[in-house]
Image: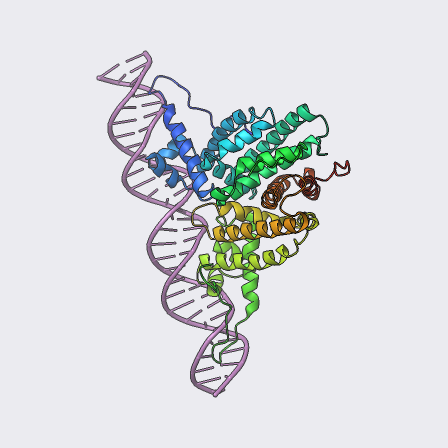
Length: 206
Length: 206
DNA sequence: GAATTTACCTACCGGTCATTCAGCAAAACA
DNA sequence: TGTTTTGCTGAATGACCGGTAGGTAAATTC
């Protein structure tokens, strides 16, 4: 959060031709799709341009530099993320999220790749991931605390359970991406939530 | 496992100067260190060369191509991995592993980066990660089955518990790498193993 | 219609990338 | 001593990278 407006949308400035906002979003979506396939480091301006059917310089017309494009793309992704996070107002919603994710591997891939790439020095995804972790764990801990107070039946604190749930979701996603058929994301997430809430062993889930 | 010997160690062939095996390993270690810092995609031959104090061509003398170097480096890393996996012969060992990992962030970084990068198309780390996942989960499931039979007290099957434990370790490592001070890896891993084994809530761990 | 602003494109530049080639010094053996 | 093999270096190549400069067509206002 160093800059208030990383890449402000183009605004009308005088009389000339009005800016077409559609292309901008097309480019951002193409960039995010490319990230999910090849990673941020592995994505070139040319690849993004090719995807939207523009020349490399056409892309550079909408975003002053590669870096600016990355940041804008992450900001766009962030909007969606924030909206999804609001849905986690009860523990069961985590399982629903896992079910939804199981139907959109590209999003999961993008998230997993960004999380790891943010670890490398001065990567544009670093802040995005850090913020995301903070928000997710906080939201999750709040939900757990509202449901169980300061200590879950299993003995875990809300903060611990939130960290574990977040971690498990990330890790399960990785295993699922490597082998979608033999990893049942919702079942595993559901199992963990049950166990953390100290639910009695039901022999149901596969 | 396509090739039996990806990069065979140099062997004496005639009378001339004997090959010095030391340099090879130096280069591989430098490559792995560089991967941990910048990722595989972000690592150039020049960067590896600089780290060992050689010219780019000096590195290429020991390995025919960049690709060969990557594969050899991953194979080297794999040897260590296999040895560590043997130690997981009881559930408590997972916590010890977490404690050990908390003292060597570079190894954890390397592992996390490789796991994610292996997701991108035809990446040399793909096979490495896939094999690793298979081994870890199998070993873990075997240990859990030996200790608890076909169903843990919490109701989870050994396979489920193994997947969850592996996932949680990976996810916790990510959170820890982003914020080492506020994430207690061994505590969280210990908590999860306790919960999975259906242990009564002890108010001990922080 | 003139002025202006957007939305591109082609051409170009310097840097970095992996890879190849030619060569040289050191080390072993005959 | 001569030969062979290893372990390098220096120079060159072509692909690709992000970024700049300059130009053109379309859209909009005056």
